[in-house]
Image 1: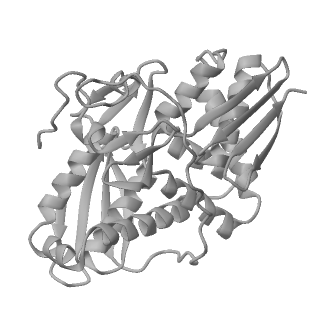
Image 2: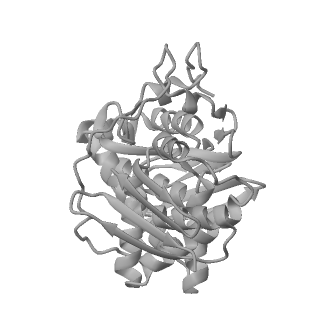
Length: 355
């Protein structure tokens, strides 16, 4: 297992604190690529959301999710690695690539990742099998392995996963065609991030917000946990999730946005029902900014109504479902009505009413 260096003061992996910047406007970006946004997200919410969508629709979305993630990761790896570097990785540096994937996985909360077996002879029987213990999302990991391997290998693959022990899975990519082909389409418009005035108390050595340093890393297991909620977290790129939701809507129809909001509402209400949701506006602003989800600039709550505005939001449909669940839990309500609007400058306004 490769060593992961930690900040000598706060103990956060330097891959996290040095590789990411928490800005004062509710946005987290990669330090080396300021255009690449990241979030610190409850990882159980990922596959939980898709399971909820499947329950509401009565059909599986697994293949679409994996295929969408594959395409996103393949494009990213091809962007990051020049053709020469991809060729070098293909022939002599596979173990270096896998070691890097394993280190990222343990530091970012993706699980304990390793190589099981591989064969690469330029024939149809070629394959690679990776193991993952405690995956942040089995669907995401399957798509990520396939996308990264396709970018390096240069051929199309198909993927399968199987559980081999409690919490441990093998994911195998084999040369082959994709089970589905998603149509290329215009992606959601990106908005220029607005400035903010959020102030984080930070580590004096690595500059990471102390709210991040409070998280508990288990580097052997590849997990990190937020102590206040007890929830497992992971550092992911929201664009991948947004692309998946766009692909689901394009493939399955206009009922997807409503299903996403409802699935998120149900998941949050069930998984976070033991948390207190009666904090003041500053508490919620800090909670959203720490995760990189937005800058919460307006929060008005009454006995039966909640109205708020998010600047620089990401995952807007999931945010609506989260706010709806949050207010229902705070008020003890079984149901509510929501309205939301995305302004031309990207601001997200959400209103929740209790009947």
